Amino acid sequence: MIIPRSIRRMKEKREHREGPWAHLFERYDGDEVVSLDCETTSLDVKKAEILSIGAVRVKGRKVITSERLDIKLKPPKSLSGDSIKIHKIRASDLADGIELDDALEQVLAFVGNRPILGYYVNFDIRMLDKFIRPRYGFGLPNKAIELSHVYHDIIKWKHIGGDVDLRFDTIAGKLDIPILERHTALGDAITVALMYVRLKYGVAPDISY
Image 1 (cartoon, rainbow, N blue to C red):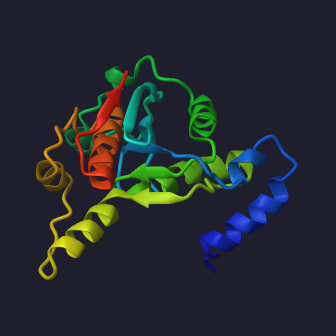
Image 2: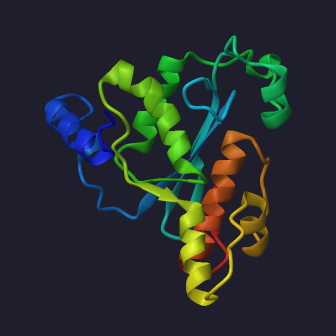
């Protein structure tokens, strides 16, 4: 039986309301979101391992690149030639990677209870939950913002009818946003953040260093 995310979140909130991570379940009322991306060995959540995690904070119209995560993990045994063709990450690139437990703690501390933004963000959340839940007893309770849905709704509203091309490169091109280090976790996270600001405010993003 699959438990709906909202019901599971309520249950986990009750269980952890007195714990060290209780603040994650509090309602967020600020103006920040965290753009997050994971590079993995596969697109199958059940089989995939996380290779790197990138995240950057967005505050209003500003993409704050000075406040970011750029985490490399130790290379998993499942890292194969097929997956390397996609993300271009070799075992040697992860030689100075950190342990998964350290990475997860950094993610929880960095994201807090802010909304999580991403391109196919549910995949990234499910990947993180796969490892967070066994260790902490809860999954990420944050609100998720899917960039392609934001783009789709705005384009549909402006141009009624027809299909909307939701490919990453197409969205970036239509918004005149440069693609930064495609298929790197931090590069994709920053690019998504820039596209989100353009969609939300209709102006060139203000990048704060």
